Image (cartoon, rainbow, N blue to C red; front, side):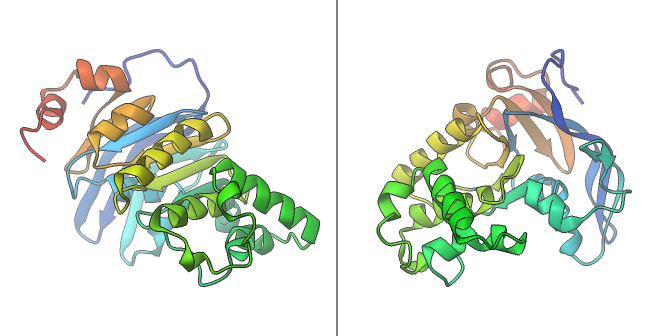
Length: 260
């Protein structure tokens, strides 16, 4: 396995050390050593079933909701190994937001969808909620499209708008990290382009990890790319190096379309 080849200049937000995960007897993640850096976009690529989505769900321990899961090793976040420490899961998921494959707005108004997280975390002030909702919708370039119908049902939005709304909902809790699991796989090309432009803009304020099956997307939006295969991290490096001159033949074979 190729480790990170370049010298680390930027701050690490997450550091995984010898991370292993099992679903029952199935060894799904094997000795993962991996860092995610502040204000970068890290893309996670690999064929179906290679462990991409499993991996990203370890970062805010959403994976703990799956029966029979056990893990070993370290996931270090804010100086703590979150696998060992008594972690406040509500606080962890406030700081490490998640956006799923398909936009999944709640059957509520646009405003209430974005205000949901802040309300859970105790914000009652109407003016503060209004400020957070507006800021979050501006951050995802949705404010101008919905500002006159914030009381309208969120489910009335288009697919691309719903996905941007779900990103706004994740941003409303003012996280440090935003995890995205195949965020454009259910979208048309124009909506996909908007989400990609959004990712590039959001990394100025947030650290982003994105699982994608679309290698062109990884090449367009990410600073670093990690290639997973059969539960192993084969290679992680600067994205341009992964796509132009990978160190491992398996990475070369996958990127060139020989399998996957």
